[in-house]
Figure: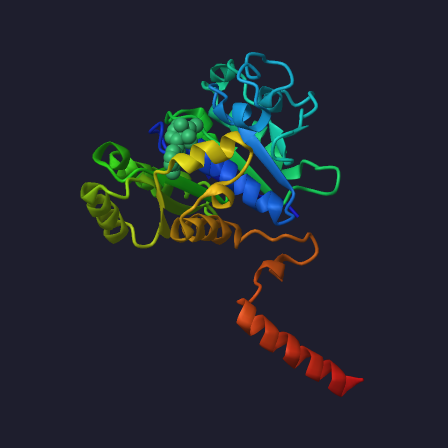
Length: 286
Ligand SMILES: Nc1ncnc2c1ncn2[C@@H]1O[C@H](COP(=O)(O)OP(=O)(O)O)[C@@H](O)[C@H]1O
Ligand SMILES: [Mg+2]
């Protein structure tokens, strides 16, 4: 089975694309999914988080750029910090920004990439903060476009056009593409931020995730220690919000090659009931 591809994309920088994409990969990996993280941002901030090496992207060899060369092996590495696989960024990535079709072909190579134990379940792509080929091509191959947005005037500017792009330019070519907007870096003590967040929910009811992620120092310190926010935070409401947001995004990803319906696991209370029913039924048969 082919992996589900999630692209974290918004032309605005600083909204949390990298932070949330890394959290997505951490969560899926911790749940036993085979995860490949793809860093398409020439600044390499995800590559830095995944390796602890701030200069790692200052090379062209052995990077995600190799996807653009069909005769080159895809240089998968494993993050020593988080344990999942990744393709690292290159500072030279902007050389591929002229050719849309080539970029789509390059990214399609991810669809059949073997992890060593079968195909990946989930590919997480961290896109650069510009509406260029490296933002659009991932959306052409993705199953889900996650748009992180900060609830302020600057953050929400462009959201409407980004949603329009998704719906009217990408979807005709890639009808499977879903869309989720995730509010991030909400300042808990800013009434303005809360007001904008409320407006966003009213404006995009179909796409916005119910969880709102706050601006918290623990997010940064956690990732620097190789831990997701929910493992380091001291606020149980936010801990739940973060965990549930990523769990919700993951819910559509099959975690077993043989049984795509496996993820449709009922809530725990129902599960017990269903298991009891199954046991009874099985008992009846034998
Ligand atoms: N919820 C959050 N709370 C605190 N800091 C955050 C949060 N989300 C992101 N950040 C920080 O904001 C900065 C920009 O985030 P980043 O994920 O790099 O955004 P992008 O990839 O969209 O440019 C980084 O320093 C990151 O650590
Ligand atoms: Mg980034």
